Structure formats: C-alpha cells, structure tokens
Amino acid sequence: MTKLKATGKGEHRKCLTQISDGFKGRGLVLFISDMLESEDEIIQFLKAMRFSNNDCILMQILDKDELELPFEHNVRFISMEEDGELLTAPELIRENYQKRMSSHIEGLKTSCRQNLIDFEVVDSSRSLDFVLASYLHKRQEIR
Image (cartoon, rainbow, N blue to C red):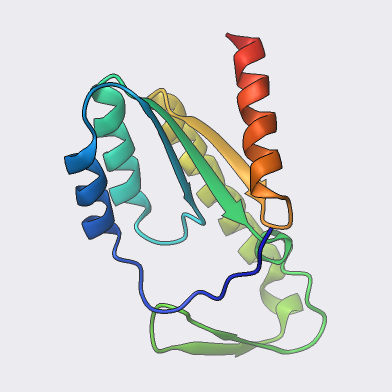
C-alpha cells in the first residue's frame, strides 16, 4: 500500500453529506477508513445508504501495530487529529489496549451485521487493489 502522510482533522460530516447529496439511484457504497474516529456518524451514513437500497461495504484499514501494539520500549504516541500525546511503556497497557481494540472491532461488526452492511478488517500493508479484487471475487462466489 502506498505510504501517505495523514495531516489535519477529518471532516467526516462534510464528506458524508457531499457523498449523500451526489448519490442518485442504487449503487455500491464502499467506505474505507480506520474507523477510529466518528464511527457512529459513519455507521449512520451507511445505514441510511443501505435503507436507500444501496449495497454497502465498510473496510476498516488498520496497521498491524494498531492491532497488536508490539512495541518493546517506551513510546510517545502523538495524536494526528488533536493536540495531545502520551508517553507510556507498552507492556503496561498492551493487554487492555488489545481488549479495547477487539471490542471496538466487534462492535463495528455487530452494527454492520444488524444493518446488512458488509464489514472487513484490512491490514494496511496489503495492496488495496488486491484486497478489493479478492473481496469482490469472494463476495461474488457467495451470492
């Protein structure tokens, strides 16, 4: 996957409004996000798109480090969206972090399942074109 540098704060509400306003008729809505911010807004948007008979897929892109917190030495985490940072020893927070991340992902899966939205967690090191092609191929075989 191409390494992009994230900057600034996401404007989810503005983006979702623009997408909704421009969507005419039925179609396929593929939303790709780390889902670590504005999850409720995004799920509500996809729920509304699904209610309008669109086929919806949510792909949560996460880095392996975000899932496992594998760091061995003190780490300084700096927020990309807000002015904040945390200096910590990963071994002290790893277990709780992994439980909370798993719970977060399970909550997204449940919300998506309840609203007939396909959900997939994707490793950010994988090529997005390969991920999409594989997913759509698998999905076509199921239907």
